[in-house]
Length: 193
Image 1: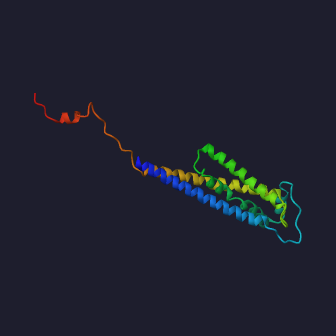
Image 2: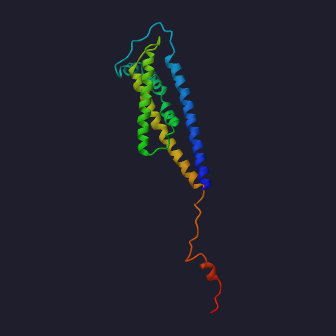
Image 3: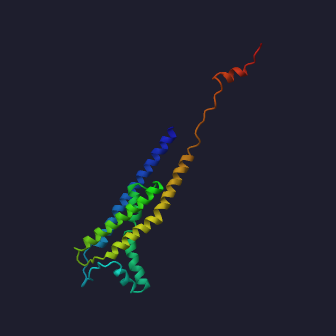
């Protein structure tokens, strides 16, 4: 019984450390993203805002494959760490399979909302241009990161929990009692009739 309580407290401590690590990394990442996307730029001219979906992606593709991959990759990678950090900070890394789908939905929605908030704030920053394709690509990056990393983390945590349970040893068993507590003792004594 005491080993089980120690195992639970150790698992709770690890769970708390993971949540704190995820929360700290999440705050650091959001600060970095805010600095990258919301600082004023001193540019001689700025392009018009893109409010037509996929128009900016088509424009990026017209620059050639390498430049298009760089531009699209930047938009995919900007908020991609949120796909891992949000579930980690929330502490939902080992839910049931049904909860895993809802975790993906919540993470995607949060990623889209953060991206939309950044684009709305950029409308008031000199030199920054609003682009609806950034919202789409940022959201896709969050989903891809979540799908690529979080299931592997969940599987690893489940394996660790299973090995922790099995490393505690087997459950002690009480030998089966006969007809009465003294039957073994009395049957060993020779009888004289």
